[in-house]
Amino acid sequence: MLSVVVLISGSGSNLRALLEAANNPLNGIRILAVGADNPADGLAHAELFGIPTFVVAPQSFSSREVWGEVLLENIQHFEPDLVVLAGFMKILPASFVAALSPNLINTHPSLLPAFPGAHAVRDAIAAGAKTTGVTIHIVDEGVDTGPHIAQSVVAVSPEDDELTLHERIKSVERNLLVQTVIDIAAKKINLSAIER
Ligand code: GRF
Image 1 (cartoon, protein in one colour):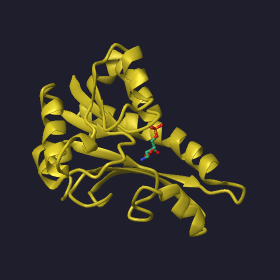
Image 2 (cartoon, protein in one colour; image 1 turned 180 degrees about the horizontal axis):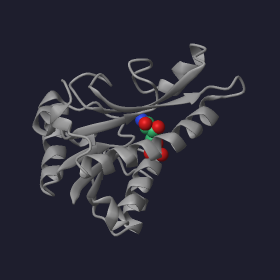
Image 3 (spheres, protein in one colour; image 1 turned 30 degrees about the vertical axis):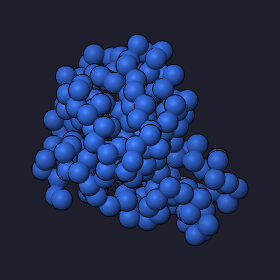
């Protein structure tokens, strides 16, 4: 059984998909806890599934480094095998990344290295991209720069705005994220063997 802590910032639809997958024992995943950097709406999914939650807000701390240390303590209390950033919109301090790497993964709504950062979907539309997608990657010290684990392509339609395209990406993203975590649990993906 792969034990997982998930971090979110927003609505938590990717979290919800992971919680549903963890309900099937055949998937070999156990969600131990869900953390957030704000009182995010998505925490309600965890509460519905009876999973403990914690909020560690950066503005409560004197520096990003101290915030990262407290966030790390909250996570390590649960002793997870894997930490999943599922729409977690804060950049983590290098010491946090080093403490968890390579067992720290992120999902990003573009085909990295194209369109890193917080506005990947808007940027893809603005650039006139014909295709975009999803990347699941190991987190390193950079912004969306870590080694790729899995990608899925999504076509951009001329009628798309940021909302419609992001919703279509997210329906692909949920499946890719869940499948990736299941494959890590089944040892079909070995994070330590992915080149960094
Ligand atoms: C996802 O597309 C994630 O990749 C991005 O923000 C979105 C979060 O969606 N960074 P949700 O909160 O899981 O619904």
